[in-house]
Length: 441
Image: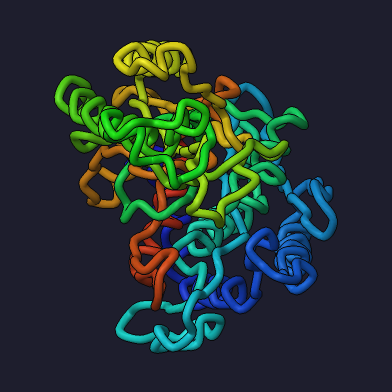
């Protein structure tokens, strides 16, 4: 074996000896009820701060340089850094400590915060999404440090809040503060596969205007031969125009699914999901109808909020222009909308996830592939169906991949992580650090 493989084997043996401690670390993290406070009636009950207190103490004991700040009240981000000797590439691991609510407690077979271990699986909210991934890269760092290994490049651990609500107070804030690395590993669950691509996502609001009128005269709009009252028969139902628009968008989805592909993504990933549709009368300052409870009025406002996805290799400016041209063309097919076209509001609620597509031969992926080969693991490249904080690193010009342990139940009942996969992931992370950052002589 060459030098790196000899050192690598020593680190792997240490991680095997640390198995019980790695599992305990994961269980300790799960025990904190760190539900994202944006999803809680009383945000004060979230234990995000307590998680970071626990991790800060552990990472300080390793001799890491610590930076900590509150992006929002009681919502601290944490960065731990192991400085290299110089001349090597820097690597950052990213993990979020916030979790989604447990939902219906009756659906859980185990205590959501108890960390029960059954048949090689550790159960609890946040086990696989993503406290296990976080525990894996902390353990990998600890094994390297305690083995006395000196790296050339810097190693950083980015431990953040708020990923489950869009990353505003978490990774986005961290990047705004200037944290950068030559390579980034987001330790979301991937079952050991490499997610080398992720599509872009923007939330979009389409507002369609009609003309309000009394519903009693609707018959005169449908059957003009019935003798309409000229003053009261001029209503235009914005909800009906919205339904026509949805049908047209569905056809556009089919066209994009047929014509647009990425080798790591499933066909049809370019969805335009209508998630919210609100109709009524009068447009409020919040962009929603003022009156939504009177069916006796012909609605003059229809608001549709879309979850708008595009391919990892597409540019937002191009897909935006294409969808705006589609909307304009649709409006020209309707006599009313021709003169009153829909309005579009992009990045609704500031939701904007840039895409990324890291080439399969990129050195970061090659470093994982070499580590896999040493561990006897098959390397599988795929793409992320959802969106993650990797988007924000990519948007800032960094190179990310997503790599983490196996499990199931994330955002649902009986979430778990597979313990063997947890230990294996820690080994992959450790081997990757050695290869990417380089060993100081």
